[in-house]
View 1 (cartoon, rainbow, N blue to C red):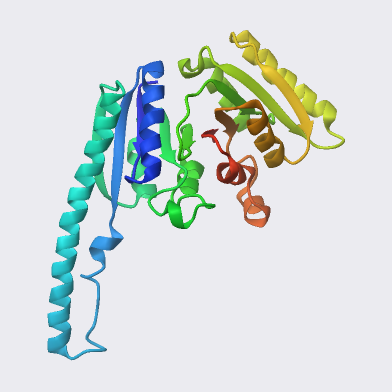
View 2 (view 1 turned 180 degrees about the vertical axis):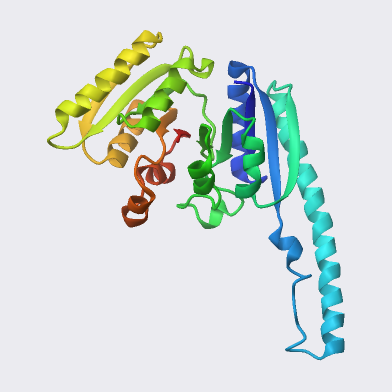
Length: 287
């Protein structure tokens, strides 16, 4: 792995992003790209306003001129804020020992622009929530699910608080994305020397299938040099995984993303989304 792409907005969650990137970088001998995207909607607000229907022509022109001046000042402030956010990111990363840092500023929409930089990245890192986290503490950030669903690279979704990663949990259900995650886990130097737990949530009547899947994962992990703790439990996936994280002191959850169809997600919700919302630890997803 050579490139880690950090998506930042300068929020409190961003501070944790930098710390996890600093933990990963030396283990992967990676270069870090820090991407900040200025939302283009704010820049277009004043210029697109049409007030002629509600005000006299002269008054509307005067007001529009004032609005444009205000927007220009806001643009200057936002540019300065962007510079400060990127400078802080570089400072924090370098103070943590990261030497190769590239700062990128774009204007537009993150979910559209990030694909241009994802192509050369091996791992995407972003916070669970963004700059409005205090007002929607039980929700994901507006861009997180769209980026994770669209990305073709592993995505690390971080929590607000940083903790060193010592103990991993792979939630394994035998799906294609889980098998890809397992392959990524056993071949990446990022996880060498860490404790590995593998958990399969089973349904009643499907105990044999769950045991078979767990045995597959255990064999692959052992062949790669891990000595995994393997466990299977009957119950709802989200509940089983969440309880295991808490009782076993897990520091990082690894799982395949979006094992079900979009239609099923719209009807009852996705395990992926529920775990991103509920997890008290960072989640590494592989789609």
